[in-house]
Amino acid sequence: MDILLAIFLGIGLSAACGFRVFVPFLIMSITKLSGQLDVAPGFDWVGTWPAFAALLVATIVEIAAYYIPWVDNALDAIATPAAAVAGAIASSSAVIDLSPFLEWMITIIGGGVATTVQVSTVALRGVSTGTTGGFANPVIATSELAGSTVTSVVSIIVPAVAVALVVAGGVVAAFIFKRKLTGLKAETAD
Image (cartoon, rainbow, N blue to C red; front, top):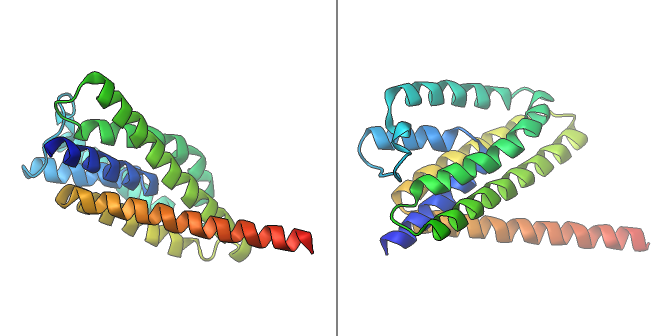
């Protein structure tokens, strides 16, 4: 059961990295420093005061940048590959005492989950920028920050609930995408 919880923790943290790259690591640092989180060997650095300070500064800069219209879109070019790497690292840090094959599989899955979430937010921000000239982007930035924070905290407290949130979000996103695609097909058929 501990292995399953570790996998759920890794997937939840990697999904949170798709919303914001540094927020999950800052929350991991806080919980590691307070003794509430165990990490895989080699990831103890996340629970050090220098890491906490660096992650705090990086998180503040990342959050602030997403509130500046057009800068947020430019930041997505950097954040998309960074989210994939961060998701892989976050999922890998949660996996303790597994075979190397399973560790690699979970790391790859974590990177994929983070990338999927990030690409979805990039698409949403692109639509927002195109339709509102970027004026609605701060609302999206706030929802992404909330999504990253809530997913990170829930992942650490109740990992299975975090995975359920990730799956539910994926289902909702797929439903919306399918609905939009069906609407586009109907418009082109007319």
